[in-house]
Length: 170
Length: 103
Image 1 (cartoon, helix red, strand yellow):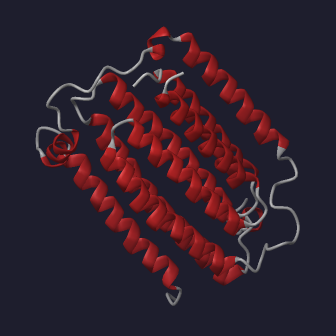
Image 2 (image 1 turned 60 degrees about the vertical axis):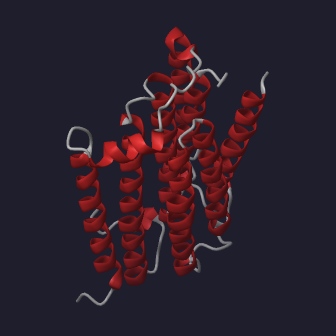
Image 3 (image 1 turned 180 degrees about the vertical axis):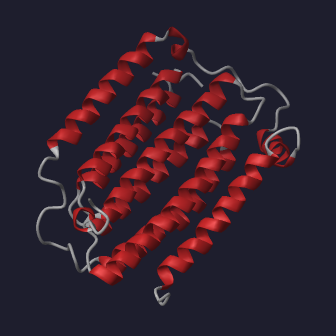
C-alpha cells in the first residue's frame, strides 16, 4: 500500500460518504454543503491524476459557481419543504435496489476486463499538459469546433435562464 | 502512480449509482438536480482517468471533461431557473406536484 493508494482511498471515502449524505440528508441546505465536500474530493482526484487545470476549474466552476447557485435556489424556495414530511418518495427502496444492481453489474464488468487492472505509465518527459490542453482547445486540427459549440451552448443557456427566472414575462 | 485504473472506474460507478439513487428517490426538484451533478462528476472522473492511463499525450479526455463542465453549468442554470419560475407561480418545488402537462 503506497502513499498514492492511501490518499486515493481517503479521497474515495470523502467522495462516497459526502455523496451519500447529499442524497439522504433531510435539510436541503445541508445537502448542498455536502455536495461541496464531494466536489472537493473530485478535485483532489483530478490533482492525483495530474490534471491540475481541471482540479482548479472544478474548484472555481463547480464549488464557486454551481454549488453557490444551488444554495441560492434552496434559500429562495426553502419554506415549502423545510422540516415537514419526508424528503424521499415512499418507494425509495426501488431506486436503491436498482442502484445496487447497476453497481454490481458495473463492478463485475470492470473487474472482468484485465486491461483495466493496469497502472499508469509515467508522464512522458517534456510533455506540458497545460500547454497541450491550451493548443488543443484552439487548434483547428483538434477541438476548436466542440469548444466553440460548448461556449455558444453556455451563452444560450444563460440567456434562457435569465429570461425564465426573470419572472415578469407576461 | 501505483493506483490501478479499475479503482477509479469502480469509484466512478459507485458515485454514479449514488447520484442515480438521489435522482430517482428524492421528492424535491432541487435535490434531483443535486443528484444529477453527482452523476456528471462520476462521468468526469472516468474521462480524466482514461485520459491519464491510456493516452496522456493527446488531450481528448481533458477537452471532453471541459465540455462536460460547460454542459453541467448550462444544465444547472436552466434547471434552477425553471424551478424558481415554477415555485413563483405554483408555490411548490415537489416534482410530483408539477403535473400541469401530465396526461
